[in-house]
Image 1 (cartoon, rainbow, N blue to C red):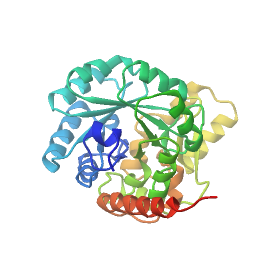
Image 2: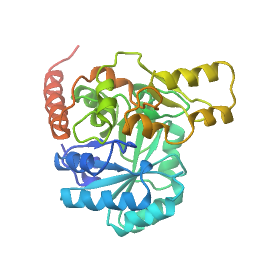
Image 3: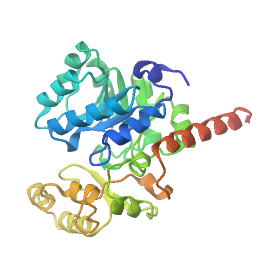
Image 4: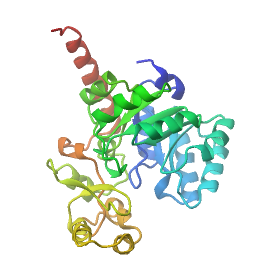
Length: 315
């Protein structure tokens, strides 16, 4: 499977594991990279020196390309960027901020840059900013989402028409068939979060993982819309947020309810009652916790089988 994504990132398969807070440490990133994909370390949950430690451990665990996901609103962003450069990371995925701010500095240091968007408008801004790759994420995805609430199957063809640079699809993709669908719509690769969050190498709590593989359709919903739309599992904390939003609570009240460390409490520490439990809609399709290597293998096997089967279909 050779295309612009595999060539830009020097990987075997155009499969990227999302840089998810509290899930994407060096173990998951190195496992995905060793399997032929591109593993990302999620810097959003790490202090700068913790990130440096994860990068160094990842370098020791794989000879293949890996990257770091960086939310651009991170308070220690300059220190984070300098650590990434100092440690020789070759790929950075950015999100939640202006793509113009750090792209040139990263590229001047030999780093390929991708940026996550939720609309065609922002995809065009990425191309204008000189970004190497755009990741278009539909609102099926877990965690923080765009306010547009555009689904992946709607978003990808529209973004494809809007830009010429390579495009990765994200949101609601966990299988080879899902990968085949978005490639048919114009994507050249997939960024997968939930499926890799629910693997052996994910750093999420066992309690969180076990809950996620028991979910049914409709067990996750967007919430926290006045603060920043976030897809999460319906639990006691979710109910508190919904009650506050239903009575017209202000953004300040919602922020106070959210507090600090709420997602760490839920995803990393396993508090299923009071934690913020972020996961994508596709979790309802997942019922096991395999090795990340086996996830990559199964995606490629299913992709190839389905592509072969469909090649003979005509109407």
